[in-house]
Length: 265
Image (cartoon, rainbow, N blue to C red):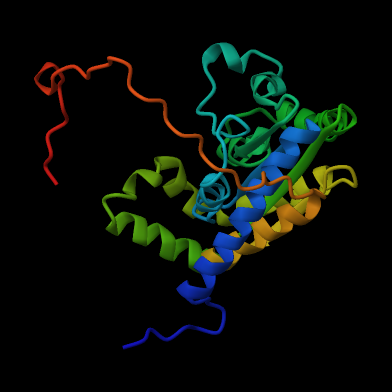
């Protein structure tokens, strides 16, 4: 029996076909970034369980990790807490010919740190003042800075939290911080609104992704990302593999001299 697709859902057939097409375009963008020595930073922010990680996985799935890499920093160390706030993010910025995807970023200060009380009021105000200047410096240096906010309703977030609890393979995605955030929905909303007021600039605007339907959110985000960086198709022409050289006295060592992985399957 065919599963009924809701008015806002998208069928698996359409989703997989379009995703495959977009991923081919991403490989073309990758080659263009390498060829033109572009420096690209893409920031993914949003509610917990909004689908940021799933979108990042679909973007990087077919790409070369030497060109496109993901940065997902953990809790800062005691030493890092004494540094200039942006200092621990700066080493991860791209060199020429690279694209870096930040799975959460320096905007932690405007979100979780503010709401959970992990920074002082003075540190928070300093961030709101200095962040736009920091990003303008990045843009002036030649970095293409793209910022996405994944927006999800509280009803949908609750449903996704519950599905993670029910799935042992995905339960690790729920941290104590995620559970605490459930009771602070309004505080996070106010923090997000103020963050946008201060950091949604002409040089580095925020792009909001409607993420209530994961598959649509992934396709829309990838499609939009491709539209922001004009690129040309540098796909190499098909070529034939050269013939292998004849063996000249080489003999493989005995199989008994090697340790094989057990063939359980």
